[in-house]
View 1 (cartoon, rainbow, N blue to C red):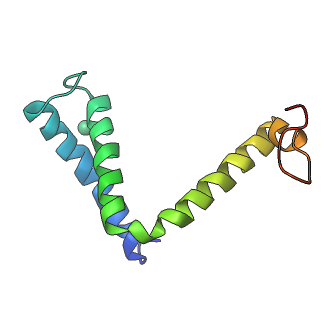
View 2 (cartoon, protein in one colour):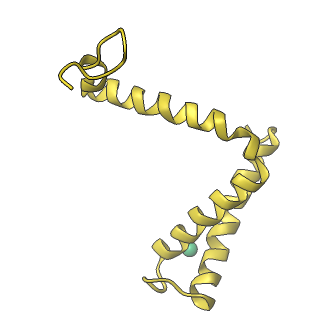
View 3 (cartoon, rainbow, N blue to C red):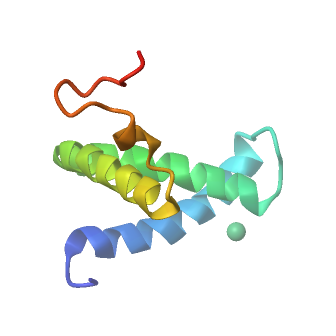
Length: 96
Ligand SMILES: [Zn+2]
């Protein structure tokens, strides 16, 4: 995976944005000061902004991937009401 630039950059930015998150917590601030959770919140925020700017063209694939992941988790947990209650013809819930 480290030979694919996107994953290599992602690994680097993950750590870098966490540390920048500590700095932003001290300078800009946040509702919960001085904790690792604050740095993690900043990391997630910075990572999303960076990813959107740098890899904007992957957004449609991520959306499809999230839908597949959602379906997969539903299927794995046995809570497959979504697909059971939908009719095959129009995709709407049966009793709606
Ligand atoms: Zn930290």
